[in-house]
Amino acid sequence: MLQPFASSEPFTIGVELEVQLVNTHDYNLTKATTELLNRVRAERFVGAINPETTEGMIELSTGVCTSFDQVRRELQGLRDTLVRAADFLNVGVCGGGTNFFQNWYDQRSDGRERSEYLMGLYGALYQQFTIFGQHVHVGCPDPDSALVLLHSLSRYVPHFIALAASSPFVQGSDTQFQCARLNSVAPFPLSGQAPFVTRWAEFGEYFERMTRTGLVKTLKDFYWDIRPSPGYGTIEVRVMDTPLRVEWAAAIAAYIQALSRYLLIERPARLSERDYEVYRTNRFMACRFGLDGACVNPETGHRGPVRDAILATLDVIASHARALGAEEGLDEVRRIVTDGSSDATWLRRVYSAHHSLHEVVRQQCRIWRGAHVA
Image (cartoon, rainbow, N blue to C red; front, side, top):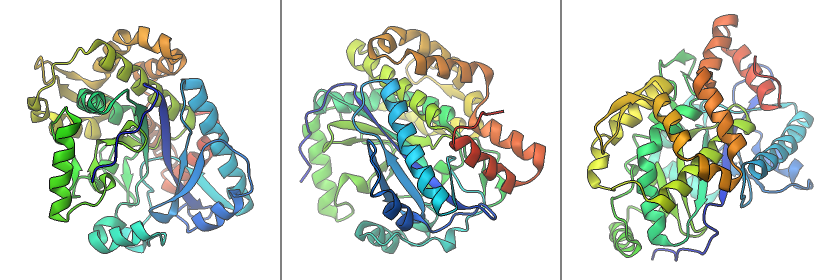
């Protein structure tokens, strides 16, 4: 049975970051999650530090936040706590959507019951799921509004992908994608977009039908790009790579927060199932070309670069950013989009300068700790 939709404060946000744990010799993933969790257990911090999928990754989660500044402070506190523990164990920590050296067949479950179940079900596909993403939860006033927001935000999925893109390299090669991470999500049979329903009662009927098939047990079995999280009273945006800096992760979250307020308060979108006719192509273009990807507006048919759509959206949602205290975060979004200085671009630039992916990951670890992005 579908979990009841919890009460939450509208437009509050929570951020989850899956981060890489690497050795300091060749910067491949290392099995350090258990030791790190033991090390941070005695520390005091706001939010949570939890295991995630395999021993080479860990998840940082803020609490319920109301503003960009609160998200940034909580992520910085979580980052600093994790880095101190990692330093004690001589382990590197970094962002980025993929590790460049990890061989999928070396990955092992972290031992939790759900991880063991998924490893048994999906086999090698789940081992290849050692990828690193940012998830943003947005509080919704009621379950029907949550579904309206989910489908309204679907038009902006290319924005979120392009802003966070930080996974150009996979297994030692340049994929020519800005975001290659989502290529590992697409093969899952329950990935993609949520069914087009805008009433919670209808969504409950869909979920019941799916559970009767035996294919799913909980909503977590759906790897949708955006999915409802009724236990938190939120929708969860799941398409972003983990950025190289927590400050940039906070800015992306602020963009999603202000956009969500605009979409639910002003209700500008005329939602239609036909929106999804161009969804997969738009998603691909953002993954492949990032801010330069040409996407189609499903309502108007206009086709143009993602960067232009983001800049236009920033103007439209400015008043909502002010109401939420998100202006500083959106100023950072405007600067990055105008300059074209995405994380994926920076990773390629470092590689071009040093011709060493090992050096690239070493620099990623420096950036994660707060070093200046050159």
